[in-house]
Length: 414
Image (cartoon, rainbow, N blue to C red; front, side, top):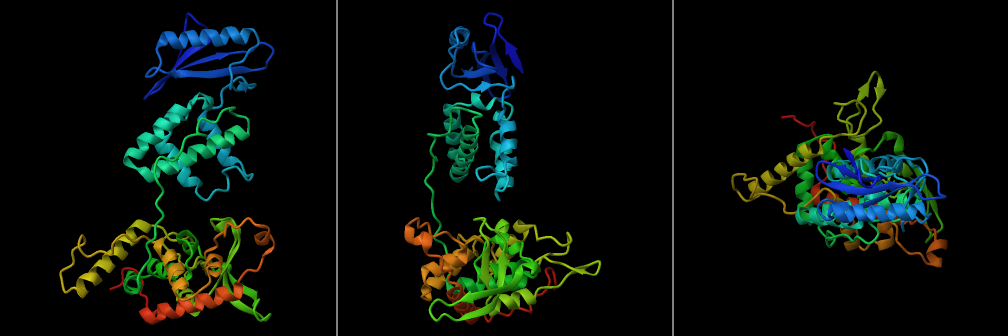
């Protein structure tokens, strides 16, 4: 709801559920369109002070003097935060948000944490408001506050580049919490535990977890693996000059976090996991998704939380059996592990096996971050070395687990 002031035409109060904001709308002599300037909220600014500030801005505008840092809106209507977000997510250019893999998560964060801003003119949002918002968030969810800060910065930076705003209120707002890099990886014994538990969970989730461990790829990439992505990779060994063709999982750029096409050499263990997966059919047409459950047709599996709890329960029961104790879900746990740790586990154990870090980086589809002239011209892909590293890792897993692949039973089987 907007209340217009009778004493100073153009001075208004926008009333919303959680806070009310003063702002002024006027035209600058000799300039097209309107300008809008936020003058604070009822919580931090007295009415008389806001009204006097509006009067000065209007008087200067009549003389052709715009307020410093103001946006001229030639359309005659303010760009709301909601409309800017929608346009940002529709922008397919490099700085836009249309192609972001995290777009859905970002939209959910906006709907949860930024609802107060949605119908406000984006240029009415102040640096103090951004800072206060992320500070309050950090009191209960430090890492989420960091993600929220990054999101706001990204949108505001885009809006400034598009000249929707002339001042970025998030430019000087820093992440409120110290980022903590995880260093958790699985020991040999924990690899055995997870592998055996995955066997008992069954298809598709159990096999998917094993595939994530064997290939070191991200959860979403593995879940979305398609038979149409399996192919041949011609690799050249830079050490011998020999060329050979191997089976590989060929991830297109749009399926990877870095938006860079990625070829994953398939070890014998990875191939057994793939070819041992149930081959589901619908209307005489084979499913393309290797880990499809069949419950929703030819689609990647869903219900991660349910299957993660099932996996943790299987791990806990195995720990209880080893300790000759009744199972207690609070006591018998594998501490502090997440599915993403499978990726770090492969990288760490490969390094233990003597694999070059450049090869590990190649397998993880990481950017080395080297911007030197040497890096720009060095384009050797380490394909042969990557295949050898996968075979080394495969041999270690088989040695630890016995790698009983085809025997995985369907989920829920007795």
